[in-house]
Image (tube, rainbow, N blue to C red; front, side, top):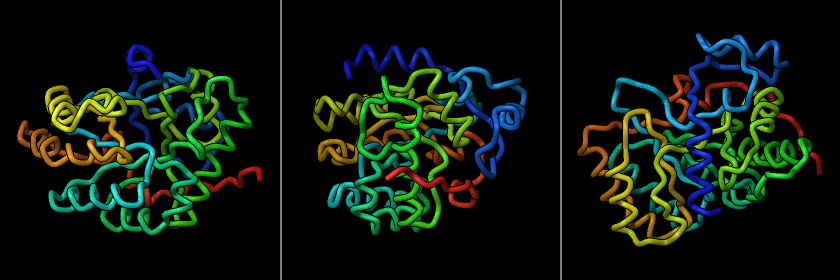
Length: 258
């Protein structure tokens, strides 16, 4: 997806969430009041997170498209050495292939999010197709670690407003986008990725990166240390939203179509 389109999506989805744990998918009428102080959730933008207004210097570091069999463990080593917890938006078929890496993520306090089963652009997909991509990935994560994800990130940020509302109503999962994009998918080099992350970090920010690119993983020591050096503290997406730990919630697992 072109960088302009990415930025347009970010600017179009500026709402944050601050809602309590939801035990199972429910009707729209049951879900709407759960957004404290926000009123009814009538549009997909209301169920979308790009950043969270906060007076505290908190940042959510997120990684998409893994797990990668060698790069993700290297990244986990870097995070463990610094006591940093991140959120990994995993592709379902990768999660099914490398469950032991997901198990390590959970053991070390990281959050696992849903990045669809096969990483398609969801523009033009039917509701049933979107839900199948989500449900298959939830099942793969649940099979690996005993809990399904509680948030999702659409590949390329491509999910229509109507689809975001549908997903929240059907599965109680908000759509997580980002507010800091170093554009590491363009392979600009480690130093550029690091500089962009450190320079653009802000309180309540959600940082996008990809743990399938070696240059991105090489950028992480200086990026993480630089952000910490600016006084920020890393938290998971659920923590940034104000939810309980993702792996302590009990969302109902929905069977995916074969």
